[in-house]
Amino acid sequence: MAETSEVVIIGGGLVGLSIAYHLAERGVRRVVVLEREAMWARGSSARSAGGVRLEFSHPSSIQFSQYGLAMFQNFEDLFGISASFNPCGYLFITREPQRWDAMKELASMQRTLGVPVETLAPDELHARYSYIHMPDVVGATFCGQDGVADPGAVAYGWMRRAQALGVEIRLNARVTEIAQSGGRVIGVVTQDGAVIHAPVVINAAGPQARFVGALAGLDLPVFPYRRSVYVTDAFSGLPSEIPMTLEFENTSYIRREGRSILMGMSDPLEPSSDNVDTDQASLEKLVGTVLSWVPALEQASIMRGWAGLYEVSPDDTAIIGEAESLSGFFYAVGFSGHGFMHSPAAGRVVAELVTGAAPFVDLAPFALERFRYQTTHETFVI
Image (cartoon, rainbow, N blue to C red; front, side, top):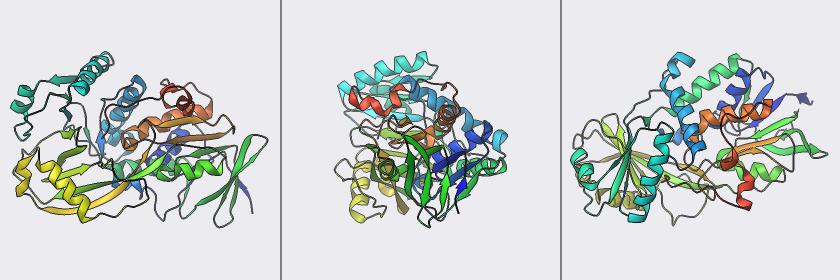
């Protein structure tokens, strides 16, 4: 039998749960979240490295991060559970003079928005962070307000509050059809034949965003890419407190994970896929890359690893809005590795769009239509 809801959200990860919570907070009570897996927030959301930072290339992205940072810092007061936010800072390093010029220019823009970013010359970098061995470095930026938080705790906090406000979360509920009539969305059908009539459907499907968009007749340029993360055993060869440290040219990063070291790297040669398996070849490539600039880690042992999927857009920036061709069909997808840190703001702006409120930031940099005329290139992406 068919049922009726005000809003259907496709995807029970961090972005979907944030949207559900923000809608419920604004008084939208009949909200159904449909998650294809057997557990909410168990896909890419559960495999995030947990980074939270303010350094981005566009004011709207920075404002997204500022909203999220404030929420993570005060999460226990807001939701009764700690997000375990650790303000360890973010350190971006580059060897390319052109990139360094762009980073310095962007740092000036970021400061005008209240981001306390520092620019570090090579001697300052090595004096502060002696574990970095990079003779050809040309500069770095550091923001001490940045840090890491626990994606699982955040998802649980949103889920619990949303349910308390009347949101329904259904698991093992894969959407197979998006119903429409007269240029409007009118509901969805799931794999078990359930029909939910709704005037609003939101695509928050992460790596499956392109498939869900196609169900609505929409071409969303979002593709999944594997990203592997590994954690060492307890290691005392680096300081007990280090920032999330990212090396641009080889797309690798390290940070503390308790007494261990967490490390990861993007591989620009790896094609898009749904593969979330780890393998020896990717591990060896990562270890060799990280050891080239943090040689102290040669004494560490890998304890465990996992892989998740980045949902990548052509310009490494999220795609957020309402479909021009299908009224009532909204999307918040393509976060390109920034989904956790931007999920609070994504939830807020989608709730604002759905309820007819003015978004708290300029959404033009996130519009799907931007690909027709000018992309929103993001410099600070690994």
